[in-house]
Length: 383
Image: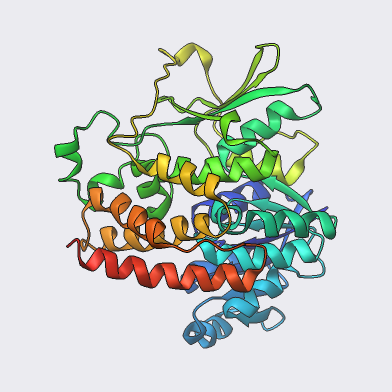
């Protein structure tokens, strides 16, 4: 029986994780749940899965949570409570499904506790890749990816030590793959939230539309698999059936295929190295009309090149990339910033940044805070 803590249980990844656990009640058990402010859903989840501890990010909701939970369940709050869940003694695996750089401290806490970390929070490795990987090694933790693309690479590499030539990270291209620059300038949040293939949270969906999501995944792949930037290539694959590919030194390419359903990579991370029946949608090859590939257009979607530039610069530059993007995306969702201004905010903040080493979490979080302030100021001048 694998005991699981889920950080971000009320979000898309968290809900899908609970569906996987419910499918395997004899093999998986929930011991910790956390949510930011969705107290009603958190209470429903706690009533069904009966964890040992529950965390609510918004401290003002703690009383409401307490009034609706079994008194045997411990309640913790805020960032400290999140780290308590991440290092909960009975948890074997920690699913980190929190959005944004807020996922870095609990990921570090899980690593220090030697947990199996099932990572759906790419920002933790974008902002603190060196720090997280050092902690994983020092404390003999295990880090397994949940992102479908990195899960695909992980599955293609499993048991294969052959030298790599490169990996291909596939991108759907988002809802505006064929839009002109003029059309992009008119995009509204409701338009950008209509992803053609995936059902995801708002922030990730906007990042997919700008290709920043793929840029963040490039940085994540660098840390997860120890690859050079030249070994990571992005290809647009609109059907989202091939989730990523590995090209070995002899030219052979292995690919992982599946329906666009996050329950499969979640289950792979939880159950590795075993394979069990999954609740995920099964892929029917006979229903596939075509599988196509094209190069990303970085003129219309400059966020991808900004991410490569931040990754190559190293240090605290990816922290700035991520923080500025988070602020810009939030302002866009609030109708306070144009869609095409998102990369402008990020690029300006990166250009102003004085690079530092990023091996200490205090430096990372201070840089994150400053970059958010800078991004808000830059965005104010673009409205």
